Length: 328
Image (cartoon, rainbow, N blue to C red; front, side, top):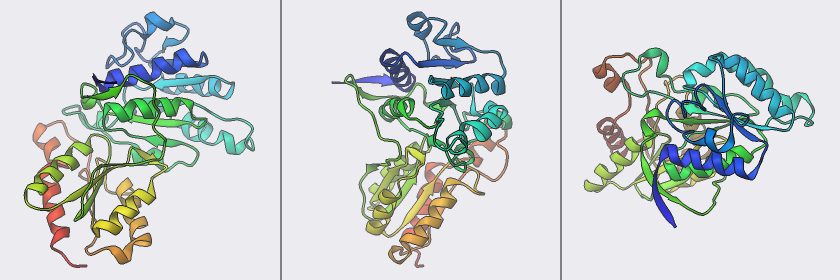
């Protein structure tokens, strides 16, 4: 039976259920315990699991990430909450040079089952140093997995799968989605890592997106439907590994592709998708692949500049119409 719960509640349920199932799972991060989490994702978890399994850390990302990586290599399954992925760059040495490489460097003897999670990307007027989207940064690293869900149902199923996975997983959420509500079953379920979801069937054009940009993609598709343009909308859910078969088969059906993402354009997720589709499905394309990304600049504080820098529904509609009426 499904209930309507918030995104933060779905994450909390996933972590709590896995902590009840496996005593090796624990949560650590800034303000996750006494304060119930900076975004109240871990609310009540300290009361249930105690201070040895819900652990407040100092404001020292490199330090507590190193502790978590060491714990993972010794048989535990840490969940590390970063207050924002912008702060996680301080811990990149442990993620890049230890967590992601240990399985290969040890010849398959030492795994690193760890989930790094927290809010990612823009969240309104937070300024340039708190507004970067990091999916493509981490997707560039072999040895880790990158998940970026768009709704409570996917968030819970993917979080449970991530906690059980034996590789390091980057789980990228969004501050502006923590209050979003969606139907989530009471019974246990997991969503496989690396499997995209076709959120809307269509015949004329494929729109690919993920995380909160799915709201833009679905909003544009709804408006286009009123004008007789049928858009198929794919939610990647997982950035690494990418579900290439789902994207390729959709493009073979619709013959057009538009990608909507919050990354900067250089070396972005859309760059990789565009390359792969022109390689594997070029003969099926009836128009050039197009994309809409964040502006190629730091995100400023002023609300008008935030709006101008990020993808939105009107610009996505304009781009779709360009591929609809343009020949390659």
